[in-house]
Image (tube, rainbow, N blue to C red; front, side):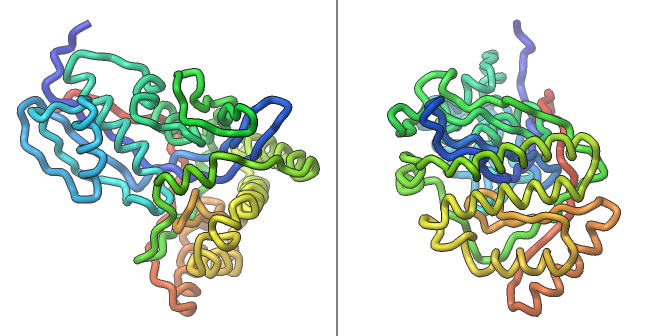
Length: 328
């Protein structure tokens, strides 16, 4: 197959990690079943062109240099970044950026890897498959978790080791997320210390595991039906459990005081559910779409009174994957 690609544009967007329904299950030898959603913004829009110019923001230089060092992005290929997702704030920017650059570069070289093959080569999917599946198909995703041999999670060595979607739905357009990111605060970046924290998970109490399984079921049903109240309640259950799982690493249920204040603001403003995305500091609320802007406005006023500077917006779930096209 030869499409004679000369310039490829990839457009994808952020994801929210809503939490885990599992930590470690010794019976199945699996760890870290994740739940998350693709959202419509912020977006990443990149163009890769043969023998083109480069316009790479400083925030994305690390990803571009990583690909070039691995021989997956030729020096002759120009990279133009028109929009990008902020790094280390809970939006999953690293996975979206690497997959976008890696796929576009492959197409320019007339290669057509599967997204899973690409993710493995790029070192994605150590714990969560939400970013990979968000890039592939969007929507609300529940993944399979990772193999944990003897209770230890190792980096994926085969495509079969990657987390896969065991459930995926298109979320009703009636349900919106209120997304807020405190300024001048970052979450825990990807690093050897993060992987060490996640390498040896502990089993959940049976009662908590059963409650989380029920919350995932309710989340899927309410997301399809467009029941924002039940959806928000299930999201909150997942978030609170995840916060407890990683309270030792974070020092608290949330990554920082700004998120704790933000969750309080969302509750007081009338959000139907809330949580921290991944390691933060981005946090979110759930609301009916026709009421979400009002709740955001109230929450932002409360945050200002708390002395927290932040940026916020309302978004629906992105129920489709990355868009790839030939560009000029």
